[in-house]
Length: 122
Image 1 (cartoon, rainbow, N blue to C red):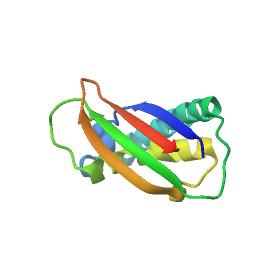
Image 2: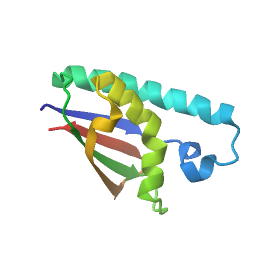
Image 3: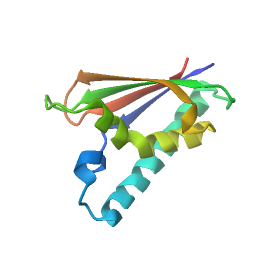
Image 4: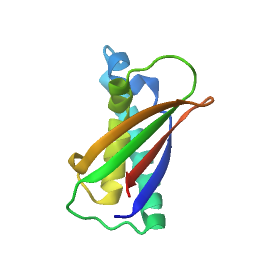
């Protein structure tokens, strides 16, 4: 299985499940569409570069959140904020996002504005 690497911008805090409560659906809907689109475009580019071919197996997914600052963020909320981006990447790879198994999450402290480094397969 080929290794595909994608680097995405750090997710908008309004996509964080704890932050989106009480936010009008139209605001988060637009943010989700944009995140999915960016994930899809960058996923297509990375898949093409790696020579990725879809298959029916589970696909290991390693996500490293390069934090933009030292504030504490829960891993489950970080993953929740990435859901639209991961949907876009899955679409680009021709897999269902339920095939992402196992999923490994890490946090590192980088610099502003932060990033999300995703390794798929390998």
